[in-house]
Image 1 (cartoon, chains in turn yellow, green):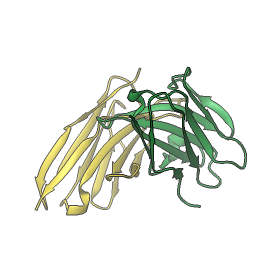
Image 2 (cartoon, one colour):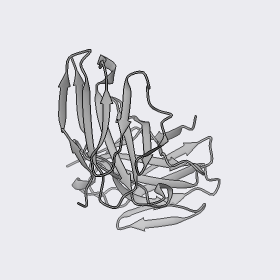
Image 3 (cartoon, helix red, strand yellow):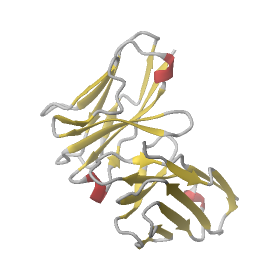
Length: 111
Length: 115
């Protein structure tokens, strides 16, 4: 089945630093989504991408849908303490309603 | 309401007991999904509904798991004869229309612990 490889698995950064994480797949996806999950909560949608090459921003977050449709990245600029959490990429293939999730990137910010 | 409401938040069951989880999707959302999140944060798709009809059940361990979404009732996920490996957080999500175009809204999950 489809699999998403998300990296890095974890990141330890200083407040104010920029962050970059990515997902790759051997399959082509029609949609790429980025979610953030806080402890004890469900994932919250951050950015949705629908076209190859699309670059979309949401405040300090920027995500891109790779040209090959097999990858996506998420950047966070000038990190702040509330950015701490687990970030997941998710993709959907043509005709499938379900999402395939990456393994998550755990972001920790050192004070 | 504007949130996906899952109950209970926590559920503890002895091995072999039945577990039933509930999900009220956002009003007006016609797609409902169930996912299982296990220890390593991996999300495993279980089943999806379009209104009360099963859309995709390819992720369901059918011998013990069942799910329903009936009109005017919360959706439910039931596990007969729970096993230790069923311990996980179960998330419900809903979507107003084509989930590929708008993504899902997730509930806060039900943490099932089988002892």
